[in-house]
Image (cartoon, rainbow, N blue to C red):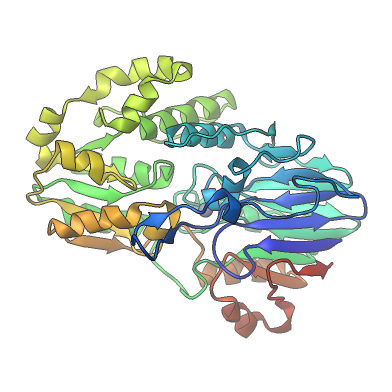
Length: 433
Ligand SMILES: [Zn+2]
């Protein structure tokens, strides 16, 4: 077998890794590079399609062994975004979960330059092994800040490879990581692990961060703004808990409300009742911003939108009840905040200083907007990614023969700790397994 890390070996963002047997080729993730700060305008901008697509044989053109499948680990754009940049060969099957497809399609429709996902989508389910050619793939649910995130055990020609995707053990799905450790996978030849937070030995958990935020707002009379991606379900769930405990309202837009509702509905279809906020949450309210308007125009979600309407509040209501609100904000939120709220007395802003800039273009401008209005941003430190103590735990548990760090700016941390078992690759380099 061969492993080729096309992108992600030398930095964070745009993961794409090939696993090749003698008979079959699969790609693990096909992400877009992270947004960059434009040197002229100083605005953060998404990578162009030209910067996003990779020249991999068989992906757009022909190749002697075709690519059979692309397996997506989770719905962060640095893991799937390149699928939207240019239609891939129609013969390539793209594997994800039903929830992931839904989140991906909703997110794409929210974008101003909407692009359709033109690919043959197939579903996998957690714990259910599927086979591509002579490559077996078993998905394992992981704890991460996306709606759902998976690691994969890949087996072929007597070899075993683990690809972690993005993970942590300090979020609301910490149990998923425990189960991953408990799963007996036999001897592992190669572990491909993310290392976004490899330079941090240990950090706070989502739980302690939420207690800190609750302490911050208790007894205060201003709105709490929290930088939060619309699909960071763990954070939205924690914020709902804080709203309940401090008698505040959690005020989301139609996009977040739709993602929460779709997740609940799709999980229910599989017999799982998710404990996340939704339209049945008493203290959840919905604002009528552009994102909500866009949802209202999508006929395919008209039933859900109909159920959102009783939860919708006017801007007068928002302005009049500022002391009791928790408002998650995403990139470019300043556009509707500036038009409709204006009053920031007592307001607080919480953001993750490690990841805020990285996920979406425009977050930088949003932070600047708050800063210019004298709103002291309080950094919180729960990362979506594994601290090094977690990575160490995984390596001690699975005892891989070889370790390939990806999605990291600190590969040296791996070589210093795990010695010559670590292979630090260059983008595009091949490794024989
Ligand atoms: Zn991620």
